[in-house]
Image (cartoon, rainbow, N blue to C red; front, side):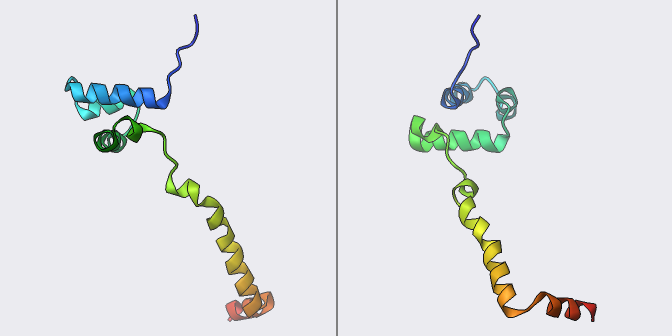
Length: 95
């Protein structure tokens, strides 16, 4: 027997259909689908605003800008190296 596979969008559409049927509370529905209530309400809001297209998987803000954040610590290190040497910092911390 083949495994049943479903796309995330299909699962979210089923979630929305169940939510609109009023057969379950939001807590019951979210527990059934293994998501938090916050996510459940977010899906419902996106569906109301954008329809089926609103249920597509989206990249989070953190994932989009991850590469630009990685260069920040290097820039800080570079600027700190130019202003003080390691031995100067150690002497200052030794007090």
